[in-house]
Image 1: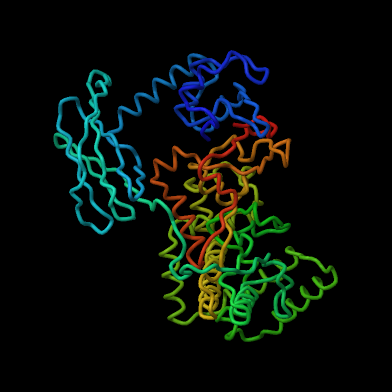
Image 2: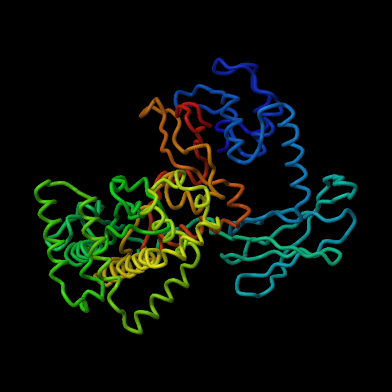
Length: 511
């Protein structure tokens, strides 16, 4: 959300008027700057546009900062300064290989500051050096706090490490994330160019699929394109999860969750327990009915396909599993942990109360609410069914990637990561503490769309991600890459800056 075109130091001094608006209060400009919010920007025509006061106040509120009045802003500036000096270390330090990284520490003025770097593998690295810092000490409630600076060496290994600070018997630590300066190209490609197909999986239907393309169709397409035509990858639309109720959201770019996949893409007959189902006639009839419906409409009918598949999958879920399969399921649940449980509970809640968690009873509107735990206990089978669905997806996605590579693809399946999630969906419910509420993400006016765009999706809160060592974002990337040779990231600029729009405002009124 950084301002475009001019450094932060220019913002407060920029003209008395801009775009027909009166000058912003200096306190508001300073407060916005401290939180990385642009107070003006340069539009697609080259015109400099000032962001309105109401937009800035709303965006700051989405970051937990009251800024409606001069008193609010002065208090917020004071509190932000106090929070800075109260921290002994930054919450997270991000470094790039090949370049030294400087960071600060805060200790009681005059006390020693000993910094220890422990790498991800447990070894201690001794390359941290202290450098000059002439920042004056700060009076924090009668205690003078001093600031020291240290520099990390440029040759640290990639990974998630920890910095430890010790001063007069007081110890604290912070995450250190070392990232590559450039990702480069996959080694298996070498110096040659690669090509592949792009497909909307839901439209890749075969005679065996249930009216909609599925993961077995994906596997077959990738094997065919690799073995017959030498393709290196197969790019598919986002396969993210949708609300498990009808009508199902048709856009793959407005998912309920980006951390989990959509069971609509499961091939029922590829689930191992299908072989042990006593009577398969009912499943065949379900498939025949939905295939006939799809042929009659000559269109993608997600609702009919999911209704039929859900009934079939319920039957397979109840088939007893072998000891080995039970162990595999237990290992999957342990690996996925709380995020899987939260998602499964949300799905069961959505089936009972509807897909908009804002309309649920108040005691269910947060994953840690006591009513949620009680619901999960009372509806244990419904919750476990949705966990089981994610396990089946994990297995079929793994099989698709494995067979694509074995057929000759150098990369295999390339997934697509949507820019955000549905505001009423599972991730917005489970991750609401790290998402900005009261605003939506979008795009400013440009030559293509001069009214701007509102994608209706809640953006990440950068401050909360920093406090949580970027774990929610890391988990998201890990999930989409687990069974993939690569990933396309929708609106990659969102990793650097993002247009925030106050809820209910026009897309032109963002920053």
